[in-house]
Length: 414
Ligand code: GAL
Image (cartoon, rainbow, N blue to C red; front, side, top):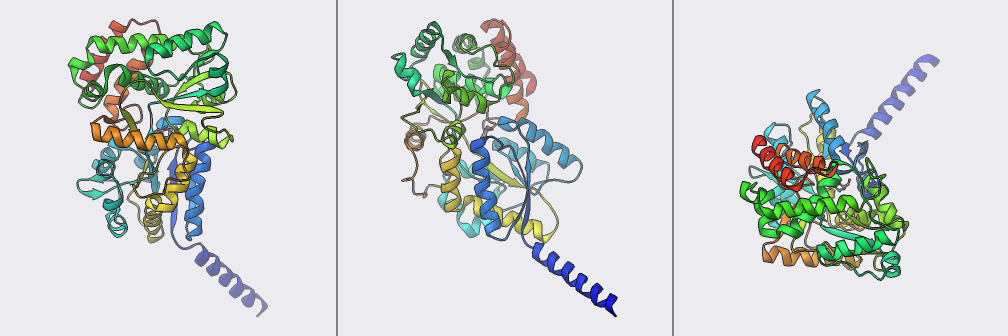
């Protein structure tokens, strides 16, 4: 008798526990592990939990997401895809073509995404007309970050041309200051390269080179000049740069060990997480030249079975594009909201500059996708370009040889 009462109550306890656990669940693969990034993704975790969701975190460290994408491939190949994955640009389409993405059109339609997202962003989120990803933000890549005190002490203004940047860097070197904080990882080399390329090629030729893969522009004298400037940049970094994570490079600017960093505005997330104030402790300016390089983070849902998981995917998609999340997340992340109807009052001067310049670039036709952050082309092509950029940066290869290699690498990747 005693025994069966005990058995009955433990069964009840088991049922209660199971019931408590039932409900939306999500296993989320992402690469947001730095201070600012972790703070930002926590906003989503909290909102998901507050709405009854159970979140299983799958962070894969490594800026730019290369390691996360390798982990994703392994999971999908073993038939065990995570429910939600940080995925961007043409990679969304590539996974869709593999037949492994879930259709989230029902949520998108119920929430009216078409009305609140710019058409250019919505286009990245649709696969053959159906919604296959949810955007969280717009990061700008072509930024110059600086330590305000170092610039003031050396009587240097934020450079508005590459010649002015070189002059400032030479002056800093002479004063014993590291001009450029950089981490020698392929994606960081590619980030500097595309910012220099936009500045020196101009928007039209950048578009031809890195969206159309036009061999003429890839082989042009202007491209030789881009590699010349990259050689200069190599001279402005300290000798400990190989392998350094991007957020450690940001810390160098924060702590006064280096003057500048060229990085997307996730760097601002680091400054802010450390309590630094834009315009006082650090400065932001668009890198010399016209245009705006955008990098939109988004989440794709993978095809999974089980109603708890599918409910979790729907809830996550709804929250991600929700007004509250778009505001709070982006205040932490350094980016600006993807939706157009978010109140911007609480955002800082760098975010306002980003929003204003995104609007004017869009009107002028100089709003361009970031190649280094997987927005402009498919993996085979961007990988081929980055291999050349990094081989040049880490050797004494001439600019002419780099251009020749670039043209061949792109041709071979098509
Ligand atoms: C980018 C991503 C950003 C940021 C950065 C560094 O590719 O879009 O959100 O996380 O990598 O990890």
